[in-house]
Structure formats: structure tokens, C-alpha cells
Amino acid sequence: MAEVTTDQNSGLRKVVLKSPEGTTAEVFVHGAHVTSWKTTTGEEVLFVSKQAVYKPPKAIRGGIPVCFPQFGGFGPLSQHGFARNSEFAVTDSAPESVTLSLTPNEEQLKLFPHPFALTVQVQVGNDILEQTLTATNTGSEAFELTAALHTYFGISSIDKARVDGLQGVDYLGSLADKRRLTENGAYVRFSGEVDRIYLATPSRLEVVDEARGRAVVVEKEGFPDAVVWNPWVEKAAGMGDFGDDEYKEMVCLEPAVAGSGPVTLQPGASWSAKQKLSLREL
Ligand SMILES: O=P(O)(O)OC[C@H]1O[C@@H](O)[C@H](O)[C@@H](O)[C@@H]1O
Image 1: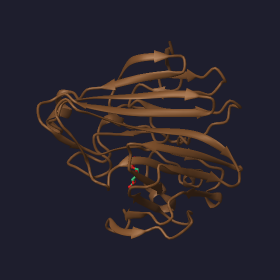
Image 2 (image 1 turned 90 degrees about the vertical axis):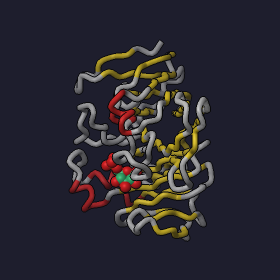
Image 3 (image 1 turned 60 degrees about the horizontal axis):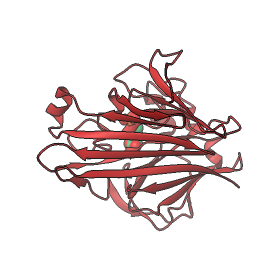
Image 4 (image 1 turned 30 degrees about the horizontal axis):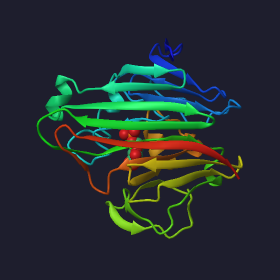
């Protein structure tokens, strides 16, 4: 069993996972939120802001917030839905994996009148992190959902970072009234704010850290889309839980079901999607 412990700094409950090879991950019960994934050599791969606020129901800034049952503004709820603001229950665990579950409370059902059961499973392997979302419609009517694993990757320097695998892919420009555009570049690089929903992307993408000589390989299933986000100077300055200069240290690449249209879940039916993160030396 992975033990549920109390985080020293925040007082919140978390689970620490460890693979036999020594890869570790830290998962907060609040939001089923992964805040750390360390390689066998002890190197952190994810980014968490030094200004992050560990005070439920606020979502933690960084790591991997779970956006569910809504991504962004694609629906009636507030931005990114309420899973990231909710207390989950730990329903299963082993030294290298944990499953956390959420059913909406009365207040959430008033805003989103669709009973569901959501599980988030997190597992570590040899320099691997896998995360699976499974949602079941436990009500009597069909409903629509959008979702994302809003993954913040730590990088050495934004001018030496890029996202590979998106050339020729159409995207909705969130900074351009969601206009549909096409990615022409071989890579996505960052020299200003980027906020794009790439549609029906290849299942394998990479966040490349040229300065560190390493890429994180993102393999996704069941998430047709991928969001690329960096807030850059102005948006960073406007976020209370994000340092003014921290945009230089992170890139978000978020497997999502968003712009390609919502998933319709029939009564009794389940939907499942996952991401697998691994490393590649350049
Ligand atoms: O501040 P939030 O709600 O965590 O959202 C952060 C960002 O999340 C990204 O997924 C969105 O594309 C951005 O538009 C948004 O700014």
C-alpha cells in the first residue's frame, strides 16, 4: 500500500508513490493532483509555482491539475470544471500506484446536474508516469463532458524549449477568438504568450528541453486534442499564485478533449483517457 501522509508544508493529505527502480511521484488527495514526478536520479520533471496556494478549494498552481467535467470555458461551469477544486477519496493503492475517486456533491450537482463517478489512477514505472481518467455516467440521462490533464513541465529556459509533433496540425487560437489556424512550424517555440488548442493531434508529442539535452515524451490515448500554454510576462504578472518570472521555467502541454467536441456519455457508459510520460535523452 502507498501510505496517505500529511504534507509538512500545507497540512494537506498526499500519497507518495515509488517504483522498484526509484522513480517517485507525489499525489495530493485534494484534486487528485500530481505535484511531483522525479526520475530515478532524483530529478524533478514537473513545475510547481513557488507561489502556489495549498488551500482548498483553490487548485494548486503547477503539477497536473485535472480539468473535469469541463476544460476551459467549453461549457456552463467556471474555468476547467470543479474536479481540481474537490476533495477526492483514495479508493485503491499499491506502492507504485493510487486510485482516487470523485462523485459530485449536492452543490456541484446544482451547477452540473449529471451524476457521475470519476476515477484518476496514477502509476509510476522506471522513469515513467501514467495517469488514467475514467468517468462513468451514473445518472439516467446522457451528458457531455470535456477534460484535460493540465500538465506543467519544468524546463531550464523558455528560449531553449519547444514542443515537437504538431507540424501541420490545426489549432484554435485562444488568443485569437478561437480562430482555426494551422501550425506551420516544425516545432512550437515560445517568444510571447501561447494559448492554443491543437485539434486531433498525433498521439505522441514531446516537450524538448534543449539546454538540458532531454525530452519528455507524452503519449496520449482517448484525448484527441492537446493544449499548449505559456502565460508569458503580462499574464504571469496578473496571476496571484505564479511568480512574475516563472513563465521562463515552465511549459504546459495538456492532453485534452476540448476543441474536437465534447464526449457524450450515455447512462451507464464509461469514458476513459490516459497519458504516459517518459524521458528521451537528446
Ligand atoms: O488559471 P487557470 O484557470 O489555471 O488556467 C490557466 C490556463 O490554462 C490553459 O489550459 C488555458 O488554455 C489558458 O487559457 C489558461 O489561462
